[in-house]
Amino acid sequence: MNSINRRSVLLAGLGVAGAGALAACSSGSGSGGGNALVNPSGSAVAAGEKKRKSTGRQQKLTLTAAPAMIDLGGGVMPQTWAFDGRTPGKEIRLSVGDTLVAELSNQLPNKTTTSIHWHGIALRNDMDGVPPATQTAVRAGSTFTYQFITDAPGTYFFHPHVGVQLDRGLYAPLIIEDPKETLAYDDEWVVVLDDWVDGVTGTPDEVFAELRQGMGGMDMGDSSSPSSSGMEGHDMGDMGGMDMGEDSPSPSASSGGMSMKFMLMGAESELLGGDAGDVKYPHHLINGRVATDPDVYTGKPGKKVRLRIINAGGDTAYRVALGGHKMTITHTDGFPVQHQEVDALLIGMGERYDVLVTLGDGVFPLVALAEGKNANGFALVRTGSGSAPKPTVRPKELDGVIMSASQLRAADDVRFKSAKTDVTHQIKLTGGMDKYNWAINGRPFDMKDPQGNPILIEEGQRVRLDFFNDTDMWHPMHLHGHTYQIGDSGPRKDTAIVLPKKKLSVFFDADNPGQWMLHCHNAYHGEAGMMANVAYQA
Image 1 (cartoon, rainbow, N blue to C red):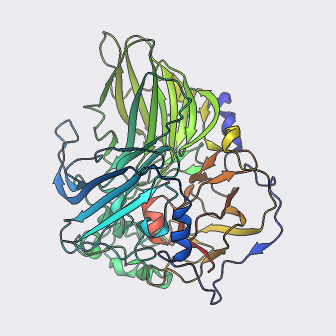
Image 2 (cartoon, rainbow, N blue to C red):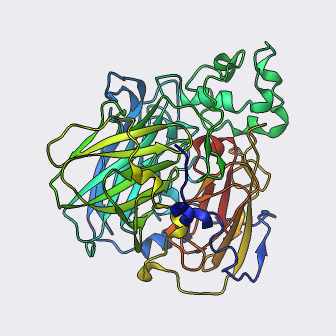
């Protein structure tokens, strides 16, 4: 179902927006050179936290990460890891300026360490949840308390930042409400999308063990040793640190004879510029339910509903449409945009979109097409009588006006004021499936030396990042602790799709001191090394 009609030319600009729109006056090389970096729990970070406006209110809770058998519907009951026994985890909702005090209790098996990253939140650096850069990983049987002021309203979520734990069940929505909300609507529905493998066909660690051997090392039927994959020269062994092998059988145990159990071949998408993904997922979920036994939203005809759509997946972009309805995009990644009416939207891993829909009368399919993968997530909107459409339904909206971030414009009140660019960094996305050697500027991130080769910035600078995707795959690039703007008038985002062989220019204000990860939000690309430390100089 990849026919793209002419109305989809709205997508033509994806990946090149703003490439020539920003003027740069200097260029950064990204090499450390012995510079002192701001300490994640140092005085500059504390000073930044003091500037945040606080309501004085606190919300305290405990999040227990533990093994759980969860019910995905349709008789699918995998063993996974989850927060408090459910996937997605329980939604957290606060108002801007409230302080979240969240104790993480690590009850994971086999001495597995973990953490929580508060995705999209501009928070204090030592609460960002990225071991070993901003904190020590939380050991099994231990606790760690995250405490921070919520900085900006919007739709966010949280997940671990250790290994490929993101692709298990450890995630949940985080909604920060705006007491000055100007959007008028009758109800809300939080829609969490996810691609699911854990406990069904294998574990994410087994998936990664197979992928990291690369296409070049694939045993297509002969019995050569998986260790002869030619990966040794690609620094992949240094990517351990992220719980490889601690929580599953040794990588070789799941990959002897390399039968390509998990690697997806032939996933193609025009919208994504070619190769759509790496991983075969047996299920695509909406709010933790399989397509054959869907989540149902019940409402009334004529009511206006705000959908907060979150892609918590590991390797899948979704094309989302509500059959029989137009959607009006109002926000992306928490920040308002000039309203845009569309039939469908494209959402990469880590991205969030808020849309308004005015409900019709009947039963309607919400379809999250796994872009290029010939599968979908499915939920229902019921406002009246009628039989439910089949889970394989393909509403015509999926081939209508399809929108992605590069066609959107920031709302006037959140658009960056024009300013001279102080520093420009070239962010070259490198690597490929052949050796599975994903990296930034040709250098895989080394968890044993998180401060090595930082991308250096200084507080107060206007920073430009020029992403150039030198690979044959798309990458959703996520910056921690900040939102950037695409081009000179595009949306404010923290995660944006960079298409293969395309350039994407973004800029942000260096107003949140610390050391911040910049990485591909494909769980497996990031784990393989497509990550860098954007570090403030002390």
